[in-house]
Length: 427
Ligand code: HEC
Image 1 (tube, rainbow, N blue to C red):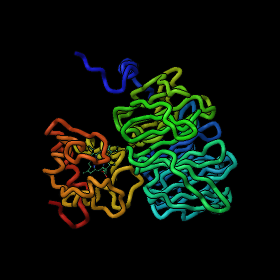
Image 2: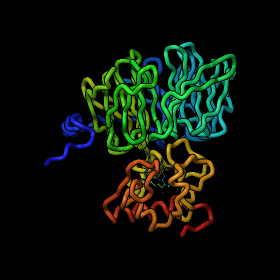
Image 3: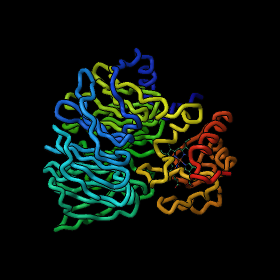
Image 4: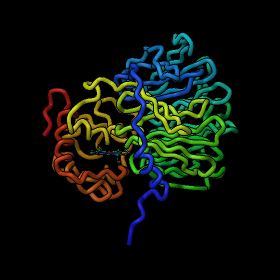
């Protein structure tokens, strides 16, 4: 008996796409670090990177026309509202700047932890979400209208046409928030308990993208309307076009997929890069802007199926060697830095020797928190060999298995070096 590939019929279409001609490469200044946020901006684009900068781009050809500074930490979220570019960073700062000059107009301490999502409302207000579960709505002038705290980390935001704000994140649930006389009042829309939500957007109904690659559509009452295994690798980004009739999703394996709405019906899949794609947005002309782990900015034109890319970031910033290359599979979800990160998984800082589920800042599953595992090289080797669903049943970590013992050893050796706390050798 032949087994159907996971993900269904359209993965065959993806396989066909892999045989396409090589990508067009433009010589252009990339970010010197992953590009976590992208947005369309007045005939061009704006991107935010882990190199603390924003870049403004003109299209055809894809050219960086300005580098904007002002953040002192990785830029983790971006949004373009009428007359304003908003950007949030890993320390919770929110900047508003003039889209023409790049001059910073507002500098706000928005969240106690990384800003994970920004969503502009049609009337110019802006919503911001934090890794710590904080949620806030701001006027264009930077006045905070309301603030609330969700029960788990937030990773995604979307405004509904009727003015309700939808937020989802680490606990897999989605809450519908209403601004009611200076307070945000939330009612559960999708119950918690599923895989973390990395993307939310409105097409005909609410689209939900989960870290395990599932794309779901919901009706007005939170009733599931459709669900499809959209990606085999960890999903990273979701965007809907201005008309609400097309969506794009991307993953840590470097694949982007274009969907027709409602549905969602897969139209085209493209292996854009071997590295994770970290962010996606539609351009007004139907092109898709993609930000990469490799520091590149790409424009995918699904109708011509062509990809235009900025140059790669310098090697030293990307990290070289087998272990560093393999770590890219984990990097979408795990940070190596001490700072509580906006990513869906716990930080790896000081990982070797740490008890599983022990970071106070991270909202672990009961299964991982209650396990007696200590992360030694041997324990990591078992986690990767068996996969989290067997090694820690009930863990929220999506399927991550590495069958090759040599690859596991290279990754663990890299983690031992890269996660060491200063002056403290790891076991
Ligand atoms: C799509 C997101 C995602 C990817 C990709 C991912 N992880 Fe995870 N990982 C998680 C989540 C979520 C948790 C927390 C699980 C829980 O609470 O049950 C986790 C937890 C862990 C932990 C436990 C950490 C602790 O503090 O106890 C380890 C170790 C780990 N992951 C290793 C890896 C490695 C190695 C890779 C790459 C090969 C990887 N992960 C890729 C999402 C991911």
